[in-house]
Image (cartoon, rainbow, N blue to C red; front, side, top):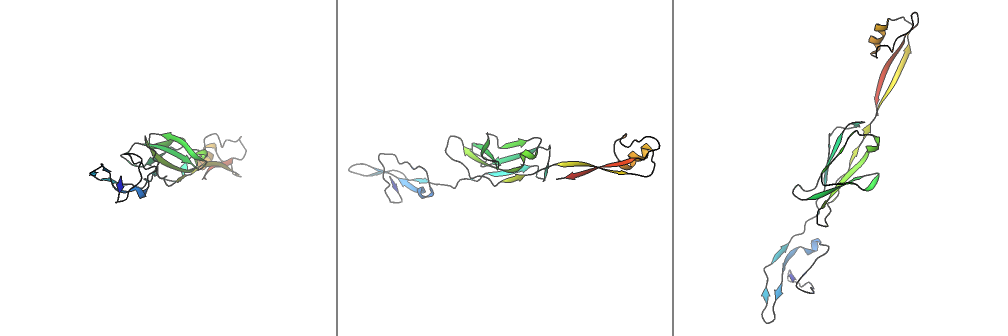
Length: 189
């Protein structure tokens, strides 16, 4: 077996490279025979860098609100048979193995927050892609508060609810008493 006019050592008529590296690129041929040399046709060995996984997220807006659905999509090579591994920063090991290239998180919660990344492995071969860049999911909570003020003026029930925008019955007070005006405050964190 010859490569670039050099002779790699072989025990028989087989030459195996494991693991393959860029140093193994080149043209190979073999020579057989006792009295006269018989040369094989050359074979060109090409070695490529491992592909990098690509991770995208839908929807693209941020932050993600509690209860929303988000889909993470991992792709390595559209034309190969990849199996996907998903990772989170909480556990630096595969949290999910799927032949599908996407994972859907329904009803996002605070426990779904953090960094995610993925990688692919070719079925039937010992080949793992480079891992994707990580993406960070942030699940924002909507906090509700109640602000109440006591008014010195006497209001009718319908006026109270119209001014505050709260549910009917929230502003009721016995006749001759003052109303407590309350409004809902919404804050996103």
